[in-house]
Image (cartoon, rainbow, N blue to C red; front, side, top):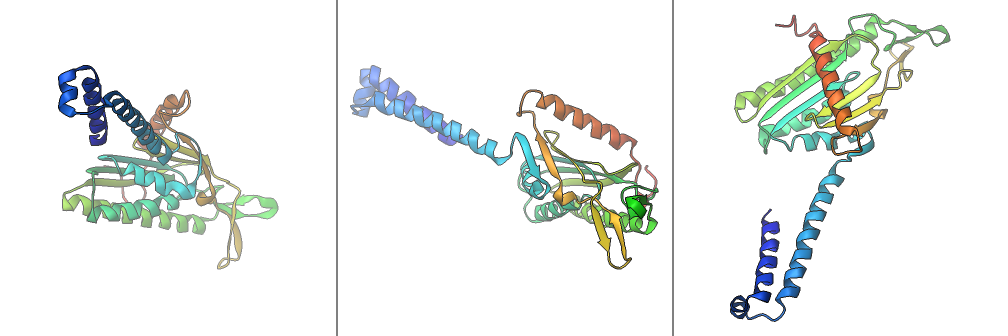
Amino acid sequence: MVTRVLLLGIFVTGLTAQFIKPVGDALEGKAYLGGALLSLVGYVLYDTVKDLSVSLRLPSRGQVNSRELGLFVSEAFRARTVDIRFLGYTGETLYNELYHRLEGLLEDPGPTRHVTIRVLVPDFGRPMTVPSRVGEDGRPVDDPDFRKRLEGKCQEFDETLSGLAERLTAVGRVNAHCEYRLYPGVPRDKICVFNREMVLHGLYDVTARTVLRSAGSEHYDPKGYRTDLNVWSPEGVEGSKTVVATWNKHLDDLWTLASPPPWRGPRR
């Protein structure tokens, strides 16, 4: 902002000196108009480059890999009010990024004053086709022990992030809240919404397999870190603003209908 004002000031002064003799005499210059035009070019270029650098920071429309979520999390935390929502499998890829970011706020909150994190994961307490054990002819066989293992992982993520949020709030510099809820069904979609402005959406490979050596069995177990995500933002192609609004409403509605996990107890 200061650079813009300085460049614009040089332009106005130089232009005035070209046509108003007393001003020109006072400045004792010979090429006011050329200098003024040069400063105007500098102003325009500065503005263009600045806007370009912002647009390059995050793609307005395209596709990214889940391993790039850290970039979006970091950008979201540049805001005063941070709102991150997720729907997916266990959310492990996003959890790692959120953990380091929340931990960093304890030392330096920067501009951030409010943080809300909402995570929707499958209800692993119900029989499921995915995740499941791979049976004969590739048929899914429900595996309560495997589901319990995944549920424990989500509980650990929830308790860790919620604990960090409570510490931040207790310090008083940032008001933070993190909550997990459960949705029924197969973990097909991976959705991340950042500050209600940027939406990432992709589809898990629901037939991806994991071999558990301890159990000597193979399981259907989607790999979130391998999932490619389409990027939507209001500044993207025509219709992007509507897509973002639709995804926001969809996640808001699912959150309203979702149940609290067993480790949190009944919803109050």
